[in-house]
Image 1 (cartoon, rainbow, N blue to C red):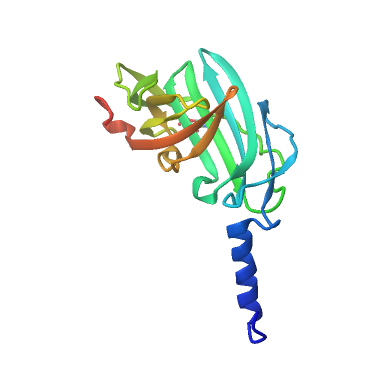
Image 2: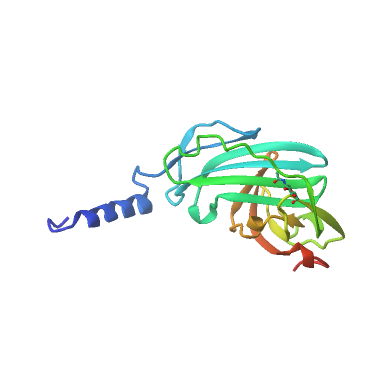
Length: 209
Ligand SMILES: *[C@@H]1O[C@H](CO)[C@@H](O)[C@H](O)[C@H]1NC(C)=O
């Protein structure tokens, strides 16, 4: 190192070394997944390119039975956006998820604030379908939207063993802005959202792309 190097340059250089080589300065986040509104696990060191800790709580309704799942772990901030992800395929097949991302060691150890989904019908309707093993599905029926779900959404992604799925239904506006790679725990599985497309539900008809 040249004696003339400025302290800012040195700090920048060490930050780069941390980022590029993970020289003992990686972020640590709590890691766990379990039923219920909170989960507890050990702090683990994140991969060098994972610069955020994440907490996600999902309420899912599968065939009429409600379940809450919590997930905590490491994430890339490019795939981590605080906010909600909801989709209603029909009254017995709904999923609502809330996430928080933060960037300090152990910052995901606190439980999420209580998460209450609004199940009141809002008068809007959307085409709906759900399938496995494909990236698109063709709607055969309509569903009624609930709470803040003002958009018709089409999502596709992967379940944890890498099986493709596609679904259409009602969603919140923030569902439409989900980044590719968004994680959504559902029951014992962790869904990865690959693609989301949306339109206002008042114009809903026909099939999605
Ligand atoms: C729940 O959703 C309905 C329909 O959009 C709305 O009228 C109501 O104000 C919402 N309730 C709460 C507590 O947000």
